[in-house]
Length: 159
Image (cartoon, rainbow, N blue to C red; front, side):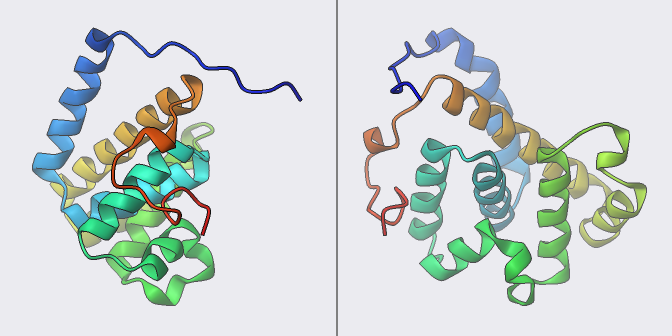
């Protein structure tokens, strides 16, 4: 395997649409559900930059390291989550691993709408789409998690 090379970042103007999506999500999705979605999708995609950022942010909002770890591997810690949280995590998994129309079955979507409401289900979907796009940018451009301010060894996956 060849060593990783640094890549030039995207031009700032390319981030404008992403920042618009981010603003949309922040205004409409509860912060705790944003943390669930961001941590789980970033773990599935193995985006070390986004994982470090979202671990740090969740800790700043009072989340324990244990809760963060449980979100990232939630299927092994199902009992730690409410039904609405499980629905959000299942939707995150389905959308992140999307592979055709059957990736998000009607049963799952209907349960998310029932538990979260129609409007919040759609906003949750936008949060999942947004973090998946960020993950793809972070991985492809090889953003350095060590460049983030306020991260610790846990955030960087070293603890």
